[in-house]
Amino acid sequence: MNKPPLLFLCHRIPFPPNKGDKIRSFNILQMLNKHYDVYLGCFIDDPYDEQYVDELKKHCHQLFYRNQNKLLAKLKGMTAFLTGKPITLPYYYDQEMAKWCQEVAERHAIQKVFVYSSSMAQYCETAQFNQCQRVIDFVDVDSDKWRQYAENKSGLAKFIFQREFKTLARYEDKVCQQFDASLFVSPDEAKLFRSRQQVNAQAKVQGILNGVDIGFFNPSASLAPENKVPDGPFISFTGAMDYWANVDAVLWFAENVWPIVKKNIPSLSFVIAGGNPTNQIKSLATQPDVIVTGRVEDIRPYITQAACIVAPLRIARGIQNKVLEAMSLDKPLVCTSMAMEGINAPHHQYCQVHDEPEAFAKAVIELVNSAQVSATTELVTENRAWIKEHFTWQATLAPLAKLYQIESSEVTSQ
Figure 1 (tube, rainbow, N blue to C red):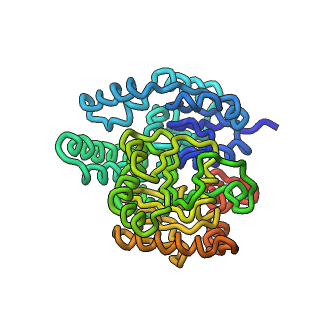
Figure 2: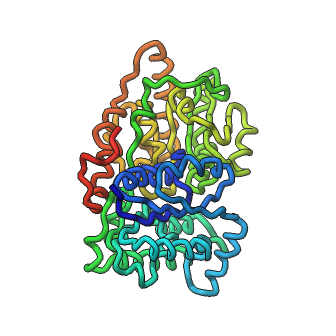
Figure 3: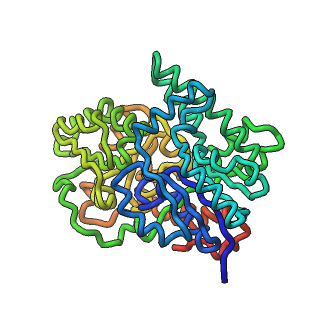
């Protein structure tokens, strides 16, 4: 039996699901592919990911991708200053992508469109898409993220970031008016966005939480040995290390918290595990017992073998997958209130939230000491139970299934 066609547009290849945006987009893709012939259009901004194209083709009816040269994209982005657009629109505009979208829409009489990220909405704003059901997953209120960046900058950078905040906010509001539904990664994000919409658009806005693959992030799963994991006690931060919010978090922790922790536990190491570390992050590895791994094949050993996980984010929107993954693996963690936003897990001994350096450091020290004392016994943290109750993909994607009139029992299960 033929399935109806659906156009799925994504600003980054949604495979492998090894970082925040790709985890969410891939799980949504999996669900929609079960019920539609998905025509997937996306960009590949990291040459490393091109090896996964054939595997991704198994998860859609047709795949069209464009390799994105970041330098060229930045140059295109600068044309926004001549047009009054947000930088992200010309940054992600590609003539071949636009042509493919038009051809797919015409040839297959597309009636359903799913757009992941506001930068891809520009490909389905023409008249022929007006009669389609268009759903956009903004994920985060990106414009507000630029506002946060601007607060921490000065001079030209502050001007550029403030401009992007204002122009992107106007574009986000325009897309919300045009599309049938606007999705966000948490009720908090949805509430923030809804508060600035006209009354006739407010009902279109809803939050759809991220989930966790609780089978993969399972403390009982057997893992292959990982040579880079330190032999002695260590704490970890995990995440893409070319992402500004992660870079800011690690630099803040290294300067304000790590010296206090290290003074109290001299044998401890700090592992920064994630791909594409910036030069600022690489330079931290010159400090004693700070390890910058770069890209790793499997992030789980850096979580399961750590004494605790730290998530000291100060600039954040949405839900942090790094926190969900650590909780699913039943690890103790210390995070800022920004990192816990949208998750709303109850605070207890093994799930602590602090924003001040001294309090953050004290919590880390207590958890590391507790882990060392409990090394020979099972550590029950309650964190995994919270994830299983609230953050499985089957549960979190149920509202999206309802939008597409898919029975909730048919949503991806784990």
